[in-house]
Length: 265
Figure: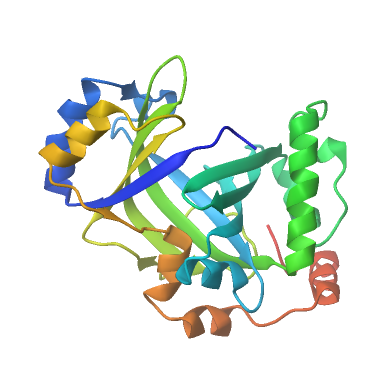
């Protein structure tokens, strides 16, 4: 797991975000990915896995203090770009994240139940990533988790150049849509805009709450809220929206779909 991290979330209007930007840039800079974009924002794409009963969704809705999510994080549709298998765990107010970089051509067989192989990793010699991938697959099998939801948004991110102990992000145009086939797409058809007209401000830190974070929320009158993109994407449209689009499938049927080429990218 990465170092313990705290995450605080706030809803903002676009006007308020624009007013806030010079304040933020007085303390931290655009991260390397945002700095490359003319719009300061880069696509952030996720495929969330869950059980047919939507257990991880209900853990979030019920506010369980010890819970986790399983997701694949990626940034484009290019066949050779990486995919990160991530376990995002919450222990009370602390966020712990574990992830492994995986070759995109290995994703379909891993989601179909294939046991991990070191060659599936971008860095086969990294023991931490090997452990993370095995842990992800273990939780996926235990939960009988399958692809459920595609989440996409544009992220404008700031952090210190020498470390990421303090990080701030503006997430815009958050879209959600069922994705039962596990396709690693950039945009879903008929996606639901989850938080419009607002965007989401996230304040992230690994040690103490920075004094300037306190000044920021007080100056701009920010009110902390919950903004779980996966859970809110389902909650705002209704659970039946997902269950109709994602019919129950046995592990055997997933393997059959993979072998027949009718599912997965």
